[in-house]
Image (cartoon, rainbow, N blue to C red; front, side, top):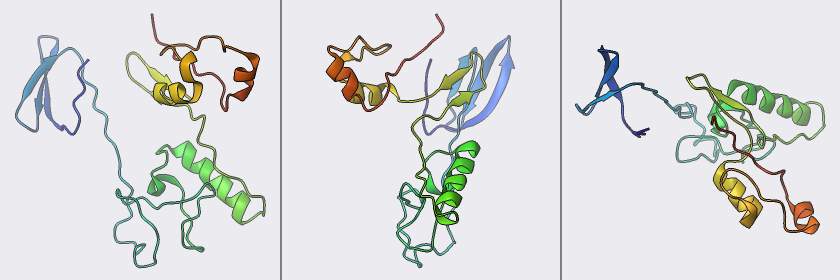
Length: 171
């Protein structure tokens, strides 16, 4: 598997059951399969947020707290403009938490800890929970890269902030 970042695909041709991929740089790659993944940036340009004094990220994201509040009291933001997690169901959850907090008087912070995601590819890819790096930091020396060893003590197990992380992959 070769991962090319900051690379655009100009053209894909089928040549004898393989793919000839021409990149925007002019380079040509021949391969069996191609997956293109693109990202998004918050679309906040021209909204006047800087003029209003809203703190913005380097990518144009509206910086918000766990309740989706910006540093300007009357400006709230959810979804892609916050660049937290760019998934429609997550934006809906953020909006529901905002309604609970702002309009129903029940402070409800947004929880981004366990978000299932899927990539509809062959083979399929799915994730939920921590990345391997986050698990290694959270779980310490018990982390082996694909599973957790048994905790050294009941005290250590009880001190974990999050449940153990497991990575499943086709065998």
